[in-house]
Image (cartoon, rainbow, N blue to C red; front, side):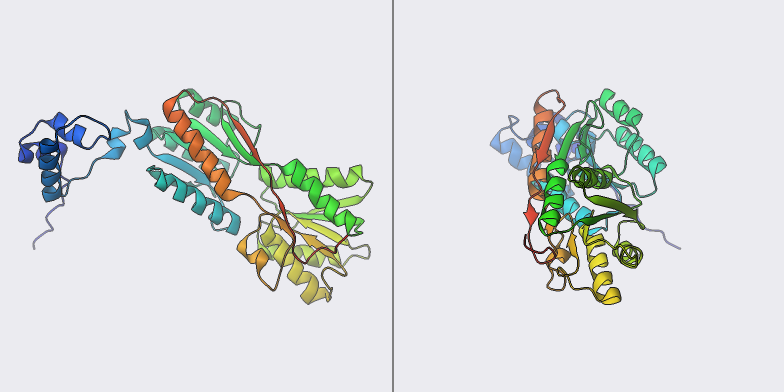
Length: 338
């Protein structure tokens, strides 16, 4: 029985021998901006092509900031908003020549804690936290170890980290105002049992705005962040005698489920009988069957800001930065004109 011949990866030393140059000449050839003669460069590149040699950027990352991987931590990565954010961010990172290490933290806090430690083991140049709530002690450990930590939609939670967030206070004030202007007085927030910082902030800030205006506001967390949760919330809220006439859903996915439940199970006309507002402006919100009024998160602008922070950190010592982005309303047809 014959076994397979193990595959080997060509080394820089082998390229140097084949090209008849020094090991340092090979290194300079593959280092942008390094000094190397045209003749040497051609010999090294020809040898590298013959041996199918590729630079080990992970090994180089031990000393080169820009070639070290950037770690992204996230949960609910199949959710529409998270998928769009991840798409925008990874495209920007790849365009900037950064390697990406993605860690799914859907297993809970213990998984997130282990993942953050893993980024230290791999000496990632930065960790971008999209979701979950890693303990402050772990973030502090990353910062003290030279790890650059960027938190998305968790503004002000951890000292020593950079913060990228949408302006939730302004958006929630606008959400309440559009429902109040439509004549809604019995208000409800449909949220998620996930309890992420951004979702709980939307709950709290919307209810604060409603209570300040003297309007009733109840909160229902009917399940995880899903379409099915929206349907279940509609069954519970709309069966009541004093059912709400204006509903804010903390995500568009929940809002679409709620909207279908209101129409299909209760025969309500939207927005004549009930006004509904979502958040995120996912593709589904614009479908003709929904035409959901919502708020848009500027994903590409947020991704660009993250790249800028990474580039700045590669040049200078990182300083704690806070970037706040507006979440503009997207008017469609689920709220009556005021």
